[in-house]
Image (cartoon, rainbow, N blue to C red; front, top):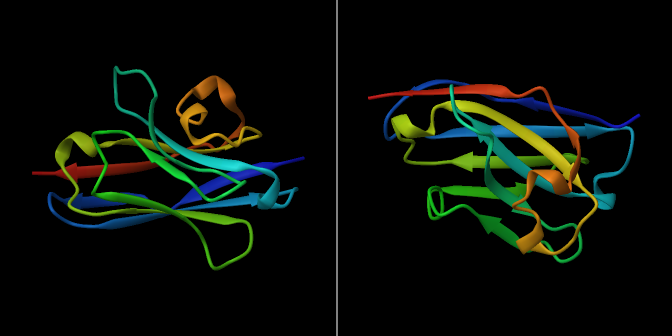
Amino acid sequence: QVQVVESGGGSVQAGDSLSLRCAVTGRTLDNYSMGWFRQAPGKEREFVAAISRMDGATNYSDSVKGRFAISRGNARNTVNLQMNNLKPEDTAVYYCAASGWTAAHLLVFRANYIYWGQGTQVTVSS
């Protein structure tokens, strides 16, 4: 059974940085592309960033491009999301997810993900 677990959320001030971590158990991470999504209160869950299992290609939403960075972690079966220059509009529950797709442009779609974590809260105050 594959499990996806996020950690690293918290409360910060605008302009601060935060690093989220995603750990996958049950299968090797090499089998999956990984993505981060977020959901703010009253809003749909939206794509944030993804990294392809095939070539390591990354994809970002326009709202976080240049501020966030997704990468494979040093620890096996982990993926990180480094978030810099955080803004109040980044406040949301952040979800990590695993996908069998490899093309980075397809990783923006929630439907292309198989396994999801429970989410971690990120709160950015002004």
